[in-house]
Image (cartoon, rainbow, N blue to C red):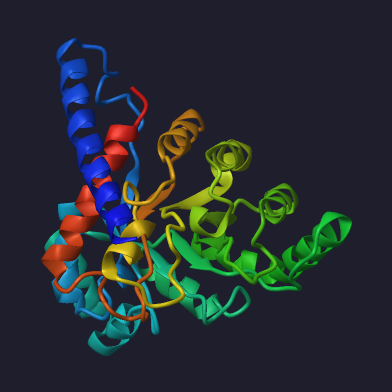
Length: 312
């Protein structure tokens, strides 16, 4: 297994080097689309990837990874949402302003889709446009039963979507495992039946079959209903402790998933939502690597890979 990981890392470095050289040559020949018109991901930094490090430590890293916004997570994945409460809104706003960062998203699985009213009002006070959570309902359904369950979920969401519209917040439902909204079909029904654009999708390839054609096709089908795209693959999973090199296979460019067709699909739909370079560590609540600098460097290596995957 160590030999396989070693070969994967060598291949990855070779790919990045070759891709960088190809990009430079293409740009020199004037074949790239104009920088102002070519589609590029709109990056947002997920605080949980830094574990429970202080917001004052994480905030300077946002622009270092080419992002403009931060997504704050609560326990157990991080504790930056709790840090906001501890420091108070004024101090948090001052920290955002100090580093020229916006609050792009609050992730709130533990509140669930029906418990977000106060959180949406908090988001509105920071002009935060997105809250990510999970769905709610029976699992393991298919066909007409799945469609009926998704319709019932959406009906329960109506009063919460009224608050979302009032606060200009989009509730993005992640296709999380062991959830009503976990399959491609459930995502399609969610989008087809939604009564408001304030109900959207947080698309996580990790939780779907690692098939590029399926994922790219799903992106094209969901279109502008995607509010958050996680640049995140399954690799060897995130549910049991693994050697760090195996755990990091969740990151773009490290595992086997080819992100080029996914980025091509995002470009084709002119995707305007957030993109997060993402993974989960084991156990939850720790940084993916030992220091903030190391985490940032790892994200940037993944971003370099994604840049090489962009359609020319």
